Image (cartoon, rainbow, N blue to C red):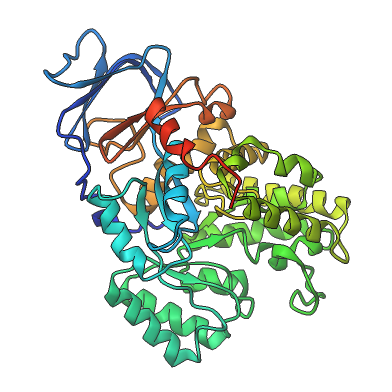
Amino acid sequence: MRRALLLATIFLTVGAASAAPTAFLNVNVIPMTEETVLEAQTVIVEGGRITLVGDVDSIPVPEGAIVVDGTDRYLMPGLTEMHAHVPDIGSQELERVLTLFVANGVTTARGMLGRPSHLVLRQQLLDGERFGPTLITSGPSLNGNSVNGPEDGERQVRAQHAAGYDFIKIHPGLTSGEFYAIADVANELGIPFAGHVTSAVGVEGALNAGMATIDHLDGYVAALMPADVDPSGGYGGFFGVLLADQVDEEKIAGIVAQTVAAGTWNVPTQSLIEQLVNDQSVADLASRPENRYMLRRTVQQWASAKERQLNERGFSPAIGQKAIELRRQIIRALHEAGAGLLLGSDAPQIFNVPGFSLHHELAFLVAAGLTPFEALETGTAAVAEFFGSNGGYVAAGKDADLVLLDANPLDDISHSRRVYGVMVRGQWFDYQELHERLSRFESLDD
C-alpha cells in the first residue's frame, strides 16, 4: 500500500503568482486524471491556482488577463525532479541549475543533497525572490562519515526536524544500529527518510523500517542474489552493475511484493545508470547540444567517469547491457504490481544536464515498458499522491504549475522536450523569456 506524505504546506505559499489572471486560450489539455486530451479548451489561472477549465466557446476571458495562444499546443502539469542536487545558495552554479530546471518544464525539485542554506532558498523561491522551481529540502546527508553511533544519528534527525527540513537523506556507510536508530526517531517525529539503502540492512530492512523512497533502485540487485551467495562479500560495482549476471530473477516478484506491502516508493534514476554503462560512446554523450549549458570542466569530468566505468575491472558491454535489462525488468515489475514510481534523474550528475535529463528519464521509463502517459504520471499525478499536495493535474482548484508543449507527449514521449512555455506558481514564462534566461549560460568556458 502506498503512503502519501503530507508535505502539502510546502506548496501553499504562492508569493510569485501574477497579479493579473492568465488565460490559456484554445489549448489542448492533458489533465492527467486519465489518458485523454481535452481539445479546444480555455484554462484560467488566478492567484496561483487554476480557477476554470472548459470549452473555449463557453469560458470568458477575464478583463486584463494575460492571454496565451494555445492553438495546436498541449497544456499539462509541470514535472517534478525527485532526485536533484541543488547547489548552495552562495554558489555561482545555483542560477544555472534552477534556470535549466524551469526551462525544461520542471516546476518542483526535491533536493537530495541538502545544505543549511536550502531552508532560506526554499522560502526565496516561494516568495518569488528567485527564479526557479519549488524546492523540497532534505537535510545534510546521514552517512558513515557524518554519523558517529546510534545516539548521534538520533540527535541529528531531531536537529534536522527542528530546523524545518522536509526529508532526511540517507547515504551509504551507516551501521545497522545507526540506520535503525535514525529510522525509529524519524518515524516518531513524522519526518520521512529517503535515498540509499544501507548495505548492513538491505532492501528488506529498509522496507520494514518505513523508508519513504528508495532511490537508484539501490540494493535491489543485491536482494536478487542466490541464497548461497553473500552479496556483501564481493565488489558489485556501481549500484550492483557487476552482479547483474548472477541474480536469481525468480526473486524479483518477492521483493516487489514486499515493496508494495511496505508502501515505499522508488525513484529509479535510470538515466544515471544507463548512460554510464550503455554502449553509447563518450564522444556522443559529450557532444549532446544540451551540454553547452554546462561548464567545460563539468562535461570533461562526466566523460572521465564514463571512461573509468568502461575500463573498470570486471565490466564489459555485455554485463552493462545485462544490468540495463535487469533494471528495466525491476522497474516494469514494480509498476505492474502497483508499487509507486517517481520521476528523478539525479541531476546534475554524469551527462545529466538539469531539466534535460528528466526527459531522458521519461524515455528510459517508456523503454522499460511504461506507456508515455504512465511515464508522465511518475512526474505529475504520482508526485501529488506521494506528497499529498494540490498539484499534478490540470483541473479547477489545482496549483498552477504547468507546462505548454508544441506537440502531444502521449503520442511520443520525446514531445515532452518541446517546451513552449512554463507556468511556475501561477507566473507565466514564454519561450522567448526562457530562451533569454538560458542564453546566459550558453558557454562551455569556465
